[in-house]
Amino acid sequence: MDHESNIDINSGNDTWFYDQSIVVETAKSEKTDDELIKILKKNRTDLENHKYEYVKAVLGFEKTNKKEYELEKRARINAVKRILNINHTIMFKLSHNGASYETSGLEFERPGEIIERLTPKVKKDTGCYITTATLRNVGIPLDNCPELALFRNFRDEWVMNKHPSDVYSYYKLAPIICSRIEELHNSNEVYDYLYNSYITQGYNYLLDSDYNAAFELYGKMVSELVEKYIPEKC
Image 1 (cartoon, rainbow, N blue to C red):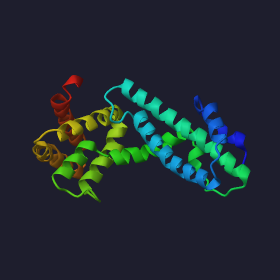
Image 2: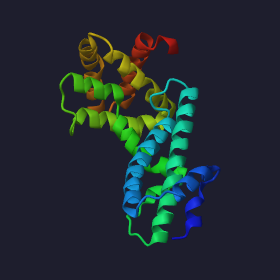
Image 3: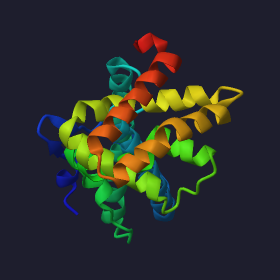
């Protein structure tokens, strides 16, 4: 294995750099090959989790302002760098010892590639926050749910093409709205109201391909919820 090729993982100005102290510490480790392989496997799981949270921060999910998600991005980047430092050194040691271990592309992804790979997953997992929470709370199964599928397609295709800034704004506001509704003692009543007043009608608009009406209605719902549950944003 060419160790030097493992160090330089670049994407434009976005680079994962080695922390020499971590490299030296790992290189001096007296752990057996089997112990190092276990660490490598665990680190890969942690690495993927940090990358996932990094992409969420890049997309501005679950943060109320730019400063918050910039801090989150920095924290996740630092965590990713640290794990990469350790993993690359472990792989070099194992290769040098002639040990057999499972290879993974996770150690060689550039930051831009991480964002490209995980953005669809982050968007799918987060879904239509308010719609998902509402449907779940009124007892509608989410697996293969036609309402949820239609709203997601509407967001990712029609709204993203015509009003992308509204989608990004929604990503930031909706998780906060849902978390504050969940704190209420009458949250079920709130979700019943949303389902009967907005979600059902919006779904009917989408079935009729009346996308402008669906967009207007959903925007009205979000504005009402922001005013009520995030007054500091008004």
